[in-house]
Image (cartoon, rainbow, N blue to C red; front, side):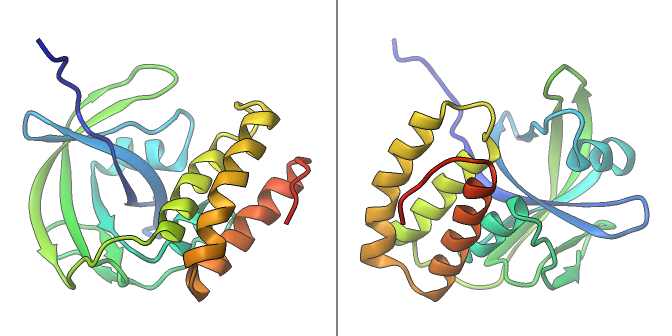
Length: 193
């Protein structure tokens, strides 16, 4: 019998700080038994905000600068007020889901927040990612693991992703890629551009 696994979807989770400021974090989430599972590392702003406030939005975006920006200290994106909860969502979101936390498994190093859908909204159709957009998202994941992955693994992956950037990137993807390359260089990893 085939092993059942949940699929992980790369999204932007927006939580509110104690002062009400939106915090956007790229995160892999999964949907299991009518719950979205959000698993932030501890400590993190997402963990603290979810634990305190118990509400968030999931943003489905095709502007990959949001993924790269969250990892390179570029978190200022226009937001709109959520409709059914006390939160915000990204103005550039193609769609968003408003969630309320029902349960927490407060394990280390990652907690699991079980979130129930309060409402779903679609703003624009999703036309699919091009290869460069996928490359930026995958590279953002690598950047989130700087210090955990061997340098050889990072440079090997970048060599492959660079091909997609060179062949299919538009202005937004090139800007996001540039931000990620700056972060990688700042971590002392030698990359060829």
